[in-house]
Amino acid sequence: MDVTGIANVATAMSEASTNQAVSVAVLKKAMDVSAAGALALIEAIPDAQSVQRLPSHLGQNINTTA
Image 1 (cartoon, helix red, strand yellow):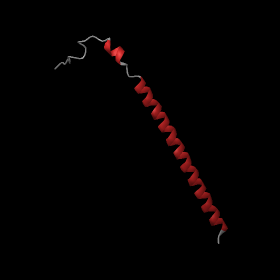
Image 2 (image 1 turned 180 degrees about the vertical axis):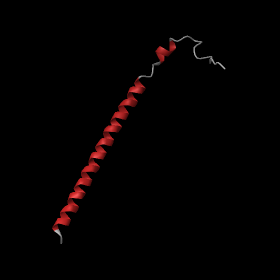
Image 3 (image 1 turned 135 degrees about the vertical axis):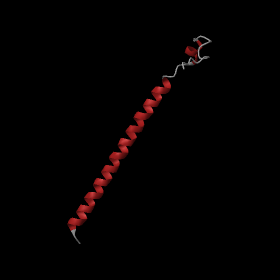
Image 4 (image 1 turned 30 degrees about the horizontal axis):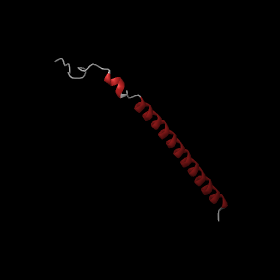
């Protein structure tokens, strides 16, 4: 058996495992950031009380110019 070949294969497998672990960690971080952004957008939606203070005629007409 070639000990150097076995060592090279073991090293390559270790590097692949490390790369995969790093990729998973980056994916999890990206998902966390995305979830935080979505939560911020949801919280930015105005509540019903602030919408009720708008004039009753608002949003009934669409102004267009040809």
